[in-house]
Length: 202
Ligand code: CTP
Ligand code: MG
Image 1 (spheres, rainbow, N blue to C red):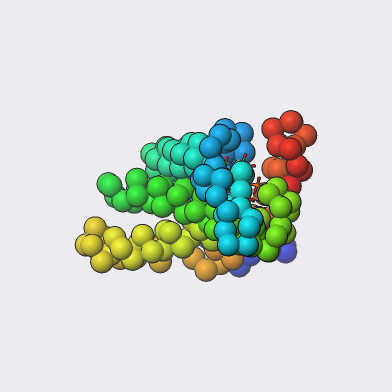
Image 2 (image 1 turned 90 degrees about the horizontal axis):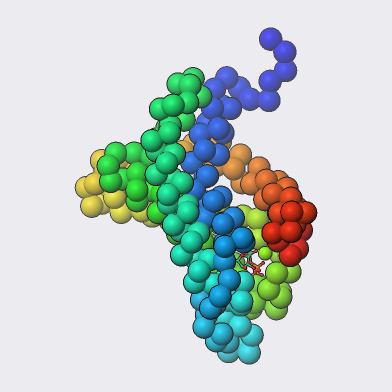
């Protein structure tokens, strides 16, 4: 009865996709508060004279982000059965697949973030200046690409007899993640700025 935004069951596909993105969200967020120190590019410049990545991409941010995202994924894996079955949230797979999935989501997120910074510097957009779109979605693309390539690799290596992404994520879910993530991202960054954790509100 009444108006529903989703056809029956689709909201569960969206919930599941958002759930699986949590390690990527954590990996992307933690460096903002825990990053800093020596930059990934070692201070080196590209042929255009500008920095390879810039001071916003650091070793500490990468290490702590990957660690925090991976640990989050592992906790989620064991937490999944505690949620009501009707929510349809899955764990991250068999042993040791769930650990690899958590690592792929986290490293992919921060790899995507660094690739975006590389392109930003080539386009002469300063470190920290907003590049609307890529700044909000870089880590989601990175996480999904790593997860998909990793899933194909696990299939090829015989660790799984199905593609992990195909059996855990839906197109509806991924599209919803791509639409909702920029909103979450802008809202949490604005909050982080208000709390004094982030220099800029984006
Ligand atoms: N950070 C880090 N190491 C990373 C990623 C992020 O230390 N691998 C920290 C940096 O302090 C960075 C902050 O998290 O300033 C916010 O990250 P992000 O918005 O991705 O970087 P920007 O400073 O905006 O740089 P860019 O313009 O290159 O995106
Ligand atoms: Mg930024």
